[in-house]
Image (cartoon, rainbow, N blue to C red; front, side, top):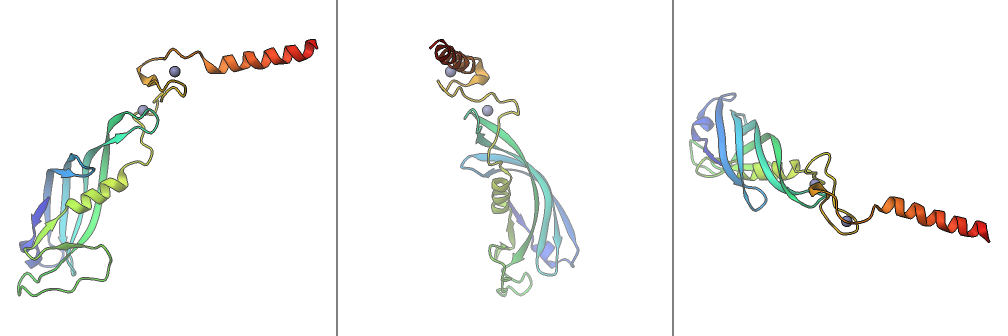
Length: 172
Ligand SMILES: [Zn+2]
Ligand SMILES: [Zn+2]
């Protein structure tokens, strides 16, 4: 996801370039298709990237443990700072912001790392394959989304046991 921004760096502050994104990015070890539009704007310090990208990541359902594809919308807004002056070729000092994104000495702005970070932040901590996911049987581990298991209904059985001991005490 590399964009050459040497022309935009030479343009006046406020100049805008629009890009269509349609690329595979390695987000969680596997390649995820990333699509959308980004707008690059020349700022006084560098280039501001803004846009919404759509992708999908493979996640494990926290209830039934099955793998499924989770759609993500990434609202990206990041300023990229040039490391080299586009006219003179001189090395530029970076702002003292830790982890800020940079444009390399060939004036290439790489969106990959930002996409990866935004996607990881957007991935739910406890993903569900569906709001109505039935989960796993706590006794045999069967995935209840695939139908019921052979375990006896536990709730009613416990009631019977309680009732039994209650009647026994009564008789004595
Ligand atoms: Zn599930
Ligand atoms: Zn079961």
